[in-house]
Length: 206
Image (cartoon, rainbow, N blue to C red):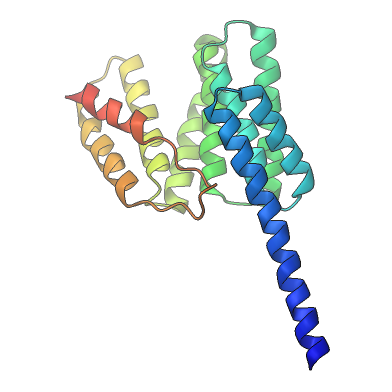
């Protein structure tokens, strides 16, 4: 009986140690990111991704960092490298976690990066896919504020592009903002971004 208890205790301690290492690494990566050390944070996420083969979160954040860096990038060579890296890590994450609304949203964001860079070239290729991805994410997690907000933001942008009235979308933005107040991420490391952007969008509607 004593041996059984010792084995059980060893398993628990080993599991806790593994979780602690992951948590320490993720905390360090987020601290670097918050300190505006994007490259160091990305490198840290890459090391975690290699060490934690079953975790999709490190690859998700590598994709997000490269997506965020690409919004104002004018050099096509740099943009291509960043978005290809984002896509590669999204593919890795999706292989680990299927039908994951957060990954689907990030995929739509990466496609939007391409459209924002060159709408004439990539609009026809990705516009419909982006709308479909947001619809899928929203269907998977109806109470996910990022799904609702990004879906509405994309629809508003499309309406504006085609010269349509965007006023009807303002109520949907308010609904999305309300979802941020009730949404609880699964852990401190799960995606929880978007509320400030949603606030700004609601204010712009007013």
